[in-house]
Every structure is written in structure tokens, then in C-alpha cells.
Image 1 (cartoon, each protein chain N blue to C red):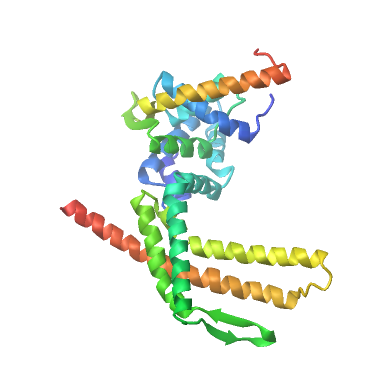
Image 2 (cartoon, one colour):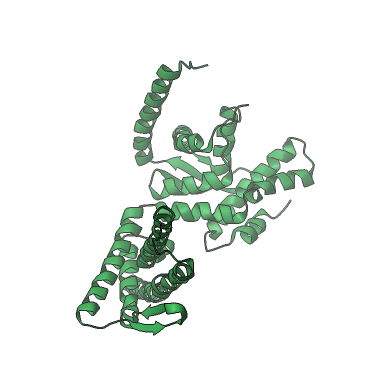
Length: 226
Length: 112
């Protein structure tokens, strides 16, 4: 008899989705399937392969993604959207305050008229926004995935806006002659924009979320001790 | 045998699983098997569809899962419908009944 618990554990232990309890449950399911096939008169090897198809037919990543999607979409508004909007709003308020205080981004000029605008002060303050989003999501019962998504909301929104601007600019250039669209500038410009406002903002936001995670864990331990 | 599109399946899955669990507690494999056999194989839930749904029901407190040791000594996680799940089932049934009646009146389909 195959060791189903070991098989399931090996194949689906990804991203912490497969807890020992869940592994045992899936192993039980496969064990029952396998025995039913044996009872139908299938040889052991064929029964094994047909049973394995249940976790291999769509690939393990699909299986895991289904769980992650379920996890992410549960109480999406309370656990992801609202904390995410709080993260985004606080990031925008900080950017606005820095602008009022005349703390300008550092501009690095590159070749071909391109430049990289690095809002260093803003980036340094972003961990607080990421932490706030993650903490609110945690307080609303968000899972670790929901907390991360909530803290990365500003990066996602800015990335999306940049892509939309790019697509809109390209679309306009198709219909408006002499619109000034220049691939040589637009494509690197998009790449630089995505680097600054999506990748570089994601790092401090994640750092903040990580710090919030540690604070949250420590406070829950303290609460348990009390 | 006609196949059913995944969207219809997804929509009907909640009703099918909750209805089965309203009769008696079952573990995952039994749920999948009973749905398959009772629908003549038209509705078939693979593990990747069934378990995320059962876990969602559990989070919503519609079902409660408990480990039970079977006569053969194996442990299985059995799901039973909670009072909250039972409350959920009634409007779900009414909704699907209304949907089928509406569909019937448009298409002229009759129950077998």
C-alpha cells in the first residue's frame, strides 16, 4: 500500500498551504480512491497511477493557487481592500506632506533624455504605511497572504496606473498622427517608472509588513502569557 | 454523457455539497463519490475544487469538521452541517428552484 501521507506531503508542501492536518485529509481521500479502484478490479499499478492523476492532472501549482485564491478572496473587502486603501492613502498623504515641505525626489539623469526620479525620503517612510496596512488586515483576521497583498496595495495601484498610461498613450498614438509617441522613450520610461514606483516601493512596504508581522506575533505571545 | 461547463458546476457545487451534508455528516471522498454517483457522473468534483470549497464553508461556519476514526481504524475528517449552514441552504435552494423554473419557462425543458 503506498504511503499516501508521504506522497501528498512531498508534492503539495508549498507556501505553507498544506498543513499536516490537510495532508492527512488529502491522503485519506487518495487512499479511499485507490482502494475503490482496486475493488473495481484494477491492477495495483494502474490504480496507483489513476489515483495520482487526481493531484497531478492540473499540476500542483494549480492546486495551490486554488487554495491561495480562496484564501485571498475570503472577506476581501475587510481583510484586503480596506487595509490596502489605508496603506495607499497614508503613502499618498506622506508624499503630499513631503511635497509641501519641499523635500524633492533625487533626480538621476540617464542617457537619451531619460531620468530616474528617486523619492528617497518617501521610500524611507513607506515601511510605516506597509506596517499599518498589514496590522489592520491582521486585526481584521487577514491571513499572511492577505496581509502582504494589503501592504503592497500602493505598489500595485501605481504599477497599474503606469501600465494604463502606457497603453492609453500607445492607443492614442495609433489614432492621432504626430502624437509624439516614441517607442525609444516610452518603453524605457515605462520600465523606469515601474522600477521606481512598483519595485522600489514594494521593498519598503514589505519590510514594514514584515516588521508588523513580528510586532503582531510578539503582542499575541504577550497576550497569551497574560 | 453531456458535460457541464465549469461555471455552472461551480455555482451548483455549494448547493450540492450543502444538501448532501444536510442529510448526514460525510468526509471529502464520500462527498465527491456521492455527488458523482447521484448525478450519474455529470457533476464530478476533483480534489482541487472540493477541498478549497469545504475549507471556505468551514471558515464561514457553515460546516464543522471533526476527525473520526472509522471501523477500519482509519481517521477521516468528517464534515457536518451547522445550524448556520442549514440557514444558508434554504435560500440557496429557493434561489436555484427559481432559476430552474425561469429557465424552464424560457426553454420549455421539462424535468426527466
